[in-house]
Image 1 (cartoon, helix red, strand yellow):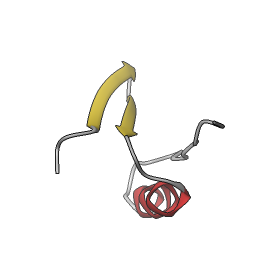
Image 2 (spheres, one colour; image 1 turned 180 degrees about the horizontal axis):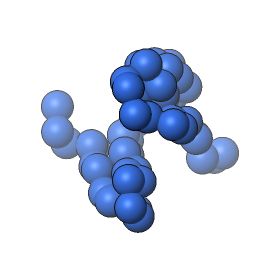
Image 3 (cartoon, rainbow, N blue to C red; image 1 turned 30 degrees about the horizontal axis):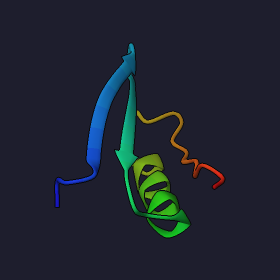
Length: 50
């Protein structure tokens, strides 16, 4: 399942995860799960408007 998945470093302690072909369901799940990880101060998702 690595096709359509990308992770890039956008700054010090900042990463951007790109998941193509998904919607709010996986974005919300990932952001909520990441916020439970010790040391994570902010996690959010955005879906581009068509």
